[in-house]
Length: 436
Image 1: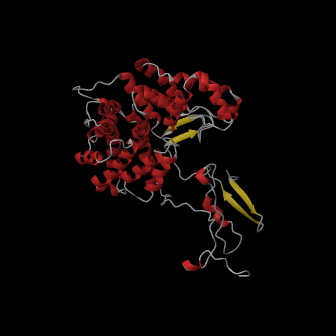
Image 2: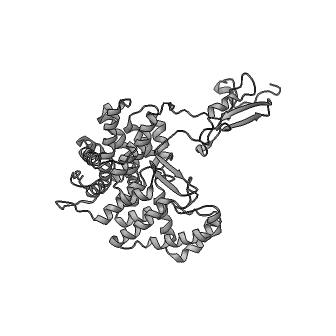
Image 3: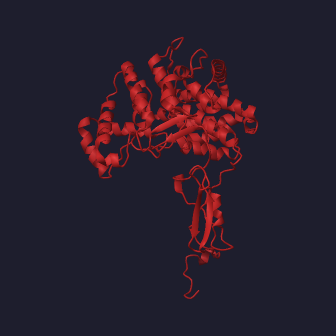
């Protein structure tokens, strides 16, 4: 359309500029034309935390926070969670299309083949203290893989990139399970090539002395669904870290370690741990009114409600809420779910929360399910990292193949001192004479 432009008048100079609009955006570099004078650098945008800045083009995940929509490559998350295995969804995110039967069989075989880790990696993990947090172990060991696969530095080679992608997806559950067992002082369990992705993770995590681990089908399917829901979520903190570090053409293992570091923060991957702590503190439904009153007074936070992007009910939370009932039918009902449901009921009917668009997000129910399945809170973020590795790698691949992307290097607004003259230590702190 001819009118897809923005007209800006600079009141400093009375100069008028016409800026093209493309898909609801303007290019920040177009603003550099707007200058107060010949020596002026030109206008920049100032957007702390990228609240309203698109840093890339992406065809991977579509998210409409106002309508509560989440799609992978155009497929509604609800349909994928109901009908797909996690590795099917992984293939979709990485390749752009769902696999055929033959492609899926080969893809499953590839992942299974690379699920083993080098024996020296286990020795590396043994060096951690017994109470080291699993996320710290995972972050370090993923970074260390770059020394085991030096060819990974050749990120410009598509065949080499694909090999590292397969390796990372395949080895992540193994590393995650070993980090957990190291904490408990249990021997490491080798991957079982006869098991599916989720069941194999459960095998390496929970198998004890039995000759063959047999996973509960309901719990295995629940884990598959949770993996699918967490596989990607647009340009979140850890995905942005993957793109920023990857833009330097660092190897994917080092880059993924940076994403794991971002995910380890309580405001990102650790949010479901915070939900469980909140529910433990509340204790019973009788204490909910007092807790809600403290939230309204600004003394407490309602963890698991609200989202940076979603201003509607998180579609992943709806799916997880349904999965919770299936899991509890096997494990027994987690009493925290009753507190959670009452909190949700109040929040969805109270004008305080409605006007602020505070709806349950994916973290509100996921921790309750993980706990019922037997996972410890310190494992929750690791569980998040296993499927999100697929999303990180999809974002990384897309970034490397985007001709507009360069090494990430944001601008800043300098607020420090102007030019100052050096003073010897003996003279520092003395006031300058008046008039100077």
